[in-house]
Length: 199
Image 1 (cartoon, rainbow, N blue to C red):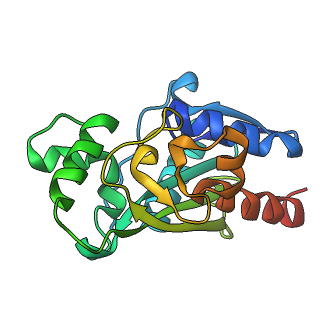
Image 2 (image 1 turned 45 degrees about the vertical axis):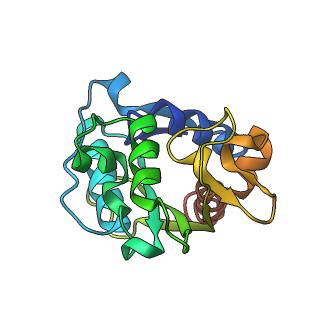
């Protein structure tokens, strides 16, 4: 089965391709099919993921999978949330992973409460009008490390410290990270839903 991935993020594509391999699903980036980015005007991961999935499916005629994910910091009332990718821009930095990490560490300097969650919401639709989208949510709670550690992953992985491993996501081997990350958890749920409903 061919699914269009409603994202142009190569990191997400690589992670999700390996996770969906057991189903025999081929994920194709929307950009490779000439599809631009959908608008994400909503304040929740699920609404934005659904909008992206419907947009990609509508422009390609293929079933679509969308992921809306982000970092929710307790001390910031759950922010940056759906604005995670643009976090650094509100502090005068250009958009980018390294700047996001830098801005986060600057904003958290001296804070005792460093609890945060990485959240991934996956939505899959068979068509733009699919009345029963599949929705899976993965969540991992950890702490924001005082400085980046590790070379793997992307986004906030270098500062997302996971107490059960004693490491950041960026320090974990890829297979361990994929099995235990927020995206790994949502992908496992989505695989189960697809097996049950679509295959």
